[in-house]
Every structure is written in C-alpha cells, then in structure tokens.
Amino acid sequence: MINEQIRDKEVRLIGADGEQIGVMSSKEAYFKAKDAGLDLVKISPNAKPPVCKIVDYGKYRYEQTRKAKEAKKKQKTVETKEIRLSPNIDTNDLNTKVNQTKKFLQKGNKIKVSLRFRGREMAHKDVGREILDSFYDQLKDIAVVDKPAKMEGRSMVMFLSATK
Image (cartoon, rainbow, N blue to C red; front, top):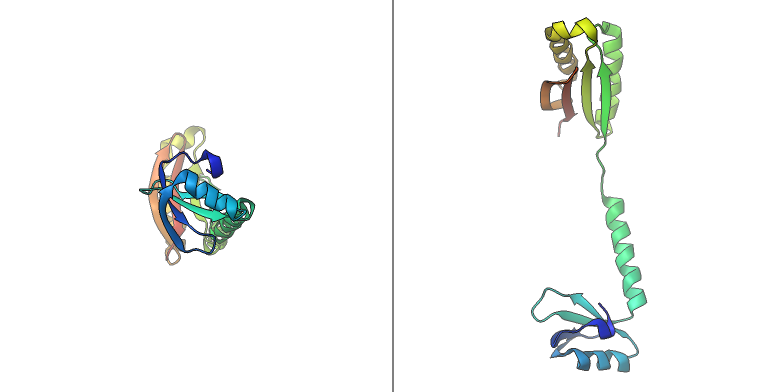
C-alpha cells in the first residue's frame, strides 16, 4: 500500500535516510512524505502499529524485483530423471543404464527407476525385484534409496538420490 491507500489510524514512520521518526497518524505521515517529494509505503503491515517508510516508490519496486531475481538465481532446482528398465534386460544394457544414472546423480538429480512388466512378465515380479536390487548394488557407493522398490500398477518403482 502506498500514500492515500494507507488507512491505519497510527503508523510507525521511518524517514528517507533510514532514521526512525516515530509513531504518528497516517495522514501526518503522508504529508511529511509529500513535503519530501517522495511516497509513503507500508513496509510491514502486520506490525503493531504498521511500519511505513518514506521512499521513492518506483525505486522501491525496482529494488524488490531485483532482490527477488537474485534469490531465484541462487535457488537450486532438483529434477527427477526417470530410468526405464524391463525384466529381460541384458547385463550390458543394465550397465549402460547404471552409467547414465551415475551422470544424473553427479549433477544432483533424483532418479526414478521404473521396471515395466508386460503381459506374462507380471507372473515373475521376483525377477524384477532382483534386477532393481542388482541395479542399486552397482550404485551403492554414490546413491541412497529414498523409496524402496514397490509395485505401482504394471511397474515396479524405486527412487534414488545422491549420497551427501
């Protein structure tokens, strides 16, 4: 809220150079801001009494957006990558998938390992569990199981993340 939008009876006023002026009526604070050729901006609406500051509103908004952009830059997003396996996967193919998973883990991504059963393969869920166990055994040194292997419909799913 700025200028006339501030309808509180009393506000704590902070001057343009940062010094605290004191508690006064919002109209009086607005007139002080007008005399200085600046805007009255409500900084902390939840405080008792609300805190208002005399600033140039355009410059204040610019600073706020710049701070938000800086905070967003420093944020690290964690992606979940999916590795798909099948119950009749060959050892070399499994090793290729393990190497790809290692690359993803080094980049800091989480991994969803899904093993899809088709048709009669559903009768051999134990084979699927063995494949997921051998897959994890090859990654033991750099990965931790977030969620152990579990059936979800026709797939067995396990989540991995890098060790800290």
